[in-house]
Image (cartoon, rainbow, N blue to C red; front, side, top):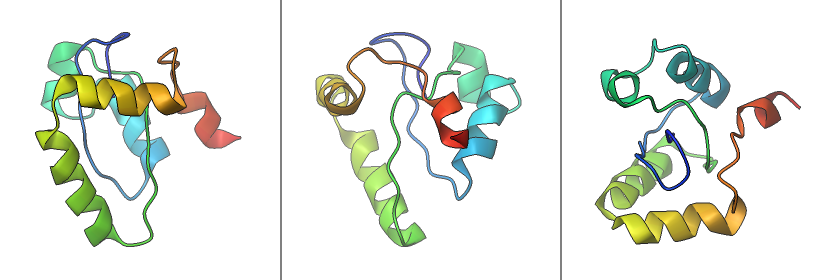
Length: 88
């Protein structure tokens, strides 16, 4: 989740990305997202096993910001909100 292009970011894991993204968008998600206005889904990964997703989340949280920017921009160069794409 992000608040704007190259702005604040939040990395998390969920078993239901559409529901969790909606919670963040409606300010009923995490306190951190609510406090910083993080309501745009700009990047997502899917994993078959929750353990793999958690390992990846922990790894990404340790990354430097420029590395995260590069990862996002490889798939979403304009930092477009991907929420509507989840229901297609």
